[in-house]
Length: 237
Image 1 (cartoon, rainbow, N blue to C red):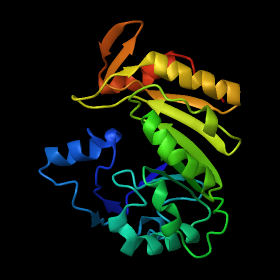
Image 2 (cartoon, one colour; image 1 turned 90 degrees about the vertical axis):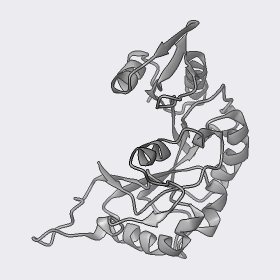
Image 3 (cartoon, rainbow, N blue to C red; image 1 turned 45 degrees about the vertical axis):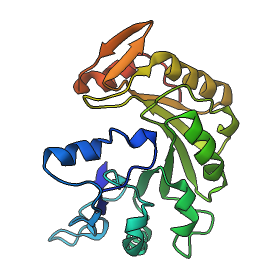
Image 4 (tube, helix red, strand yellow; image 1 turned 30 degrees about the vertical axis):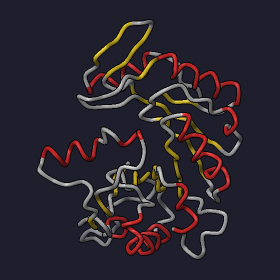
């Protein structure tokens, strides 16, 4: 597993962005997350060590652009070169998450075709409103590997209309940070049931900082949020 952030910074576009962890981390260091910059790690996928070997070894999954959005407008001047690097490393799996699936068609390399086999894209839907807005576009997009991320989960979501055989996984999780909004276990359970009916794998990633179950509200420290989600035992593969 490797991380690659070719650019840093973003702009909030929907309710899921309200307490963005990137903004929170940057604010602690006096940075303005709305200022989008190309990073020093921009060429990481093609960097080599002194032996002439790639710094990211073959077979790794590269979590891409997790301090921004790969489809962000500000990154338009840099993205084609990023695609060139992704094309050059077909021995890796590149995974990115986006709230901007509406821009997908405007951001593709000319040889994309029906998608590259080593590129995995997850569409974020934090609410029913965003599911209805983004997922019809997502299903139309020429992408080989598609998943849905319901995080931060801000309410119940009916995903059934979009749980087709194209969707390889649905993941869900609560919101992190001291200002986190509540994530209710019943919402997560319902997503799990929908996925089971559709035969789509489901993964409960983490509870978030403020979690409600059986009418009780829990404030869960960051280090226990993933382990508590695993204990629920509602993942399906």
